[in-house]
Length: 630
Image (cartoon, rainbow, N blue to C red):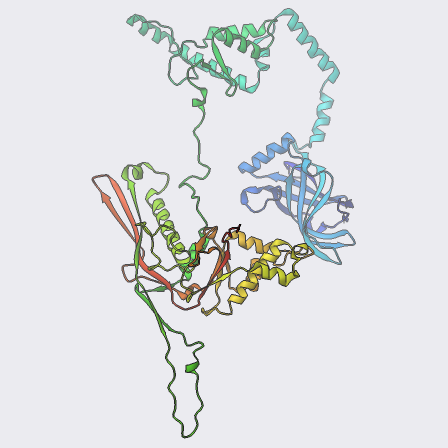
C-alpha cells in the first residue's frame, strides 16, 4: 500500500452521538475507495484551506481515512502540527444523509477535515440541514473524537515505531540512573564541558552566543591588517564595536576574552547556569540586558530593535478607504431622470375639487354656461456649478511607486462629488445660507424640504397605532419595535393614498429604522417580517435602501416645529437632473510649473427638481420640545 502521512477513523459504526443519533454500519459504504479533499476545520470556501486528500476505506467498524498532505505552505504547516501532536482528530462533512428513527442509514462523505480534538470531546453530529422524519435528506458535520496515527518514512505507524524503540532502547530506569550518576560525577570533578553548558541554554540565549562568535571571527580576520594600519598612524589598534549597534563605536564590548569569562563563570560551582553568569557579568561591566531580544545594548545608548525587520502591508497597494455608506449614492444617481436641459421648467394645473369645472346637463331653451377658471402652477430651476478641486505635488507623484497616486486621488474626488450631488438631491446642503460653497436649494431642489405641492410631509402617529393595537394597554402585550413598525407602515400606507408619482416608489431610510422594523416580534416571540423583501411588500414599495447620512437629520417648519427625518419614499424617475452639453461631470487637469503641482478639477453644472406634484413622501417624527407651563 502507498505510504501516507497519517490515518484515522473518519466515522465509526454504531456510534451513538450526543444528540441521540446513531451511525449504522455501511452508512457510507458507497465512499469505499474514493478520494476526497482534506481541509482545515471544514473551511472549504477558500482554495488555500485544502491541505491534501484522503483515501477512504469502508471497514466493518466504520470508514478509515488514509491522508496525504500537499506541498503548499498550508499543507506543510498542517503536517508539522500533526507530527507534533497539536492536532490529533478528524471529522467529516457529509450530505445526502438518510435518517430513520434517529439512525443514520446512508450518506456521502464530501470532505475529511483536521479539527482540534480538544474542542470536540466525544462523538456528536453538528447538523447543518438534517431534519427528522422518514427518509430525511440533509447534510451534517460528524465528529468521532478518535485520535489519528502517524506514518514514518519506514512505513510504520506511530504505535509500531514506539514498540520498536522500546525493544532497542535500554531500560529507562537504568538510563536515568546512569545519567544522574554521570551528572553528579561531573559536578564533583568540576569538569563540566562547554557543550554541557551550551546545551543548557534556551534558543534565545543560543542566538546571542552565535552572534557573538560571528562578530569575534569577523574581527579576527581583519585584526592583523587593522593593527598594522593603526600602528603606522600611531593610533590604538584595539577594535571597539558592539554588534547590536549600527556601525557605532561603544565604550564596552563583549570581546573573546569576555565570552571566555562568562563561560568560565557559568561552569563554576557557585553560579551553575549560563543565564545567571550572563546577568552577573552584565551587572559587573555596566551592560544592560534586553529581555525582549535576548541581546545586550550599552546602557543609555542605542536599541536592539533597529535589527528588527521592516513592517509590511497586510494589503499591499493603495490604502483602504474608510467611508460613509456609499451604496445608496449610486442608486440615487442611477435612478434619477437625466435631462439634456439644465434650465428646468414644470407646469401643472390643479383641477381637483373645482366645482365649476363639472360637466353640466342641458335643458332645451336654456343658455349653456361657461366652465370656471383654473390656476396654472409653474416652477423654474436654474443650474449651479458643483466642483471638487485638488492639487498633487509632483514630488509625491514620483516618489509614491506602490500604486497610482493620481488615479487614487481622482477616485476620492469623484466619490466626494457623487456623494454631494446625491445628498443635495435627497436632503439638501446643510451649510449656512451665507456660505460661499453652499449648493442652493433653488438650483438642486432637495426632495425632503421641497414644497408641499411636490413632497407630502407626514408625521409618524405612534399614539394612534398603540390604540389600534391594544387600546391604552399596548405595552403589556406588544413590544416597542412591533408598535413602531406598525405605526410606520400605517403612516406610509395612508400617505400613499395621496401619492401621485409614477410607478412603484422606493423607501430610503436609516439602517437603524430598518432594523427596528425587522426585529418586530409577535406575542410568541416570532419575527413579524422575516426579510427585507417581505417588509418592502408590507410598505407597498419596490425596495428599501439604507443610508447612514439620513441619521439625526432635522428641520424647522414655518410653525417653529422640529421634525426629525425617518425616511423618504419616491420614484426617482420623477426627479430630473439636468445638464447641457459641456455641463456634465468633466475632469480638468493642469500642471503648475511655479509650484510644481498637478492640479485637478472635477466639475459639473446641473440643476435638479421633482417634476410631478405629490411625487414624494417625507416620513417625519415631531420632536419639538414642549415647555412646561407654570
